[in-house]
Image (cartoon, rainbow, N blue to C red; front, side, top):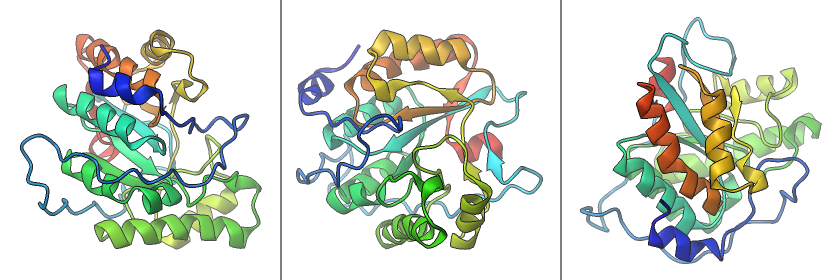
Length: 257
């Protein structure tokens, strides 16, 4: 059930999904001050160092899923939106012992730099979801490269690395050009997914839960979003459904290595 903190935050939620039919380029989220530190952590405690880009010899450049014999899945979140909702969602994951992968939008980090620390301190991993969340596959090469490196620069400044993964914006799969540009920027793999939760359309928590649990398989990489109250509400039953099937929610790096 959605906790009180998430319910209170829902009224101010930002629509920040990756559906290309939605208004994606709304500019950076408004800064709202530092998020509360996780329970039991000192506010001045340094963030954990971010993982460098994950490299897995033998895996394709563009990864849609992990090994099907694994008893785990990766829940991956496109990172943008109300930081209160993001914090509530991370708290739900942590209460269930789950670890997730957050692919952040660079201009969101400009407005909410404290969220990089919050994500890492929860044991989760960070990746790159471009600087402005433009339709990257439709951009000229120079502009697409600037979208990738702009977010990478912000991740490096805040965490010491460019993040574990690159995921292209407003598309499920990268073109060959975008894949080449990502590798040039330092990402050996492009992270796609095999399960789309469709949560960016705000269908409500029960629909998000059904969509994920109907499609998920061992080794799946699931696409979800921060900044949506329905996703926060759907996460506990999703995690419970995975647990009933003997599946753990782990970071993408844990899944593929």
